[in-house]
Length: 123
Image (cartoon, rainbow, N blue to C red):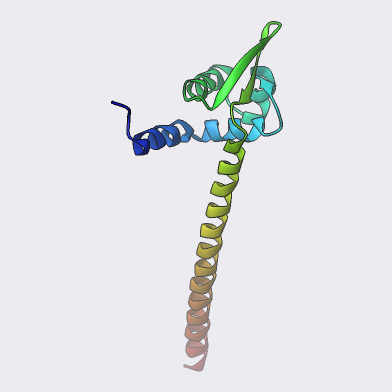
């Protein structure tokens, strides 16, 4: 019996669920790269990078093609970049709402502090 779609989706998002894997995909948005080209931009050790690339390959998110002695990595479906962009928009919206809330909280505490100082001067 095939897996339910929700389980496949959960596995897909689990594959994306590591900061290094997201960063790899962000770098691959600039085009296919070898491990040595990815490493400085991703900022992790080569062995760790290879592990993360392996997980992305097993999940079907990236593919590797041999060019000479190098493996060149690319995304299997460019729609992954649309997904990352949607995630960025959701996070931006969420953070902007939090920023407005924090600004409101800060202004309240500043008003309270100013009122307390004014009251102390009046004594």
